[in-house]
Image (cartoon, rainbow, N blue to C red):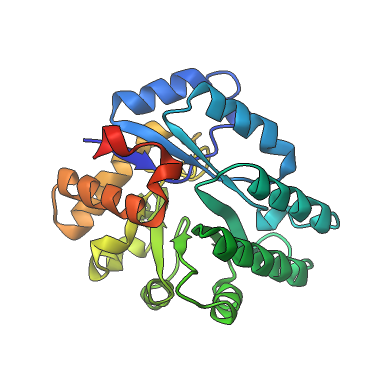
Length: 265
């Protein structure tokens, strides 16, 4: 059984002391590929170093995280665009709108989101959306840019069934992580009502650890716990869910950018 963690921040300082061991533990349980979202330019060197160490197991995104949209937004976006012109990426992300911590940069977040959506269309890449306390605002921007060229993943989806169906209608898959294992996570109550073809697996490590590790540092080796819970929701075997969700990843991300086709298929 081969699994892909579609969203993990393996380059952040939470993994500074044991990054190699974390990756080895993940591979030991079948998690053999890692898709890496961007945050801002301060992490670029760390991301490139991770990719250099694990070129057959890592693919990078480019983008500006909404929580890092600040006064220097234009400078940060210019760096993202320069990267897109310089080398290949598997997606643009994570991008979107986050109103949980700070609402004062909403207009700037909307502008940054819109610009990066247009770049994704230009480069024929999926987008990976970060949405927190902002579904209405995110959907508003997506509808403004709606086209067959706009597609991707709603990362760490924690919305309602109605919002899930809206996302799917807009040509997005749902990234399901540790929240599905929480008692108050809610999404486990309706997940089975959504076709499995719209689901991909993620950890968002080092954040949002699944039970029984909730509250501790998350890591990609916990992805099978998320897989098992999703299998329970759909009343399918974990192997069936693993196969289908991996197929889903290969549909949304460019396989030539993922570098995994030979060993995974």
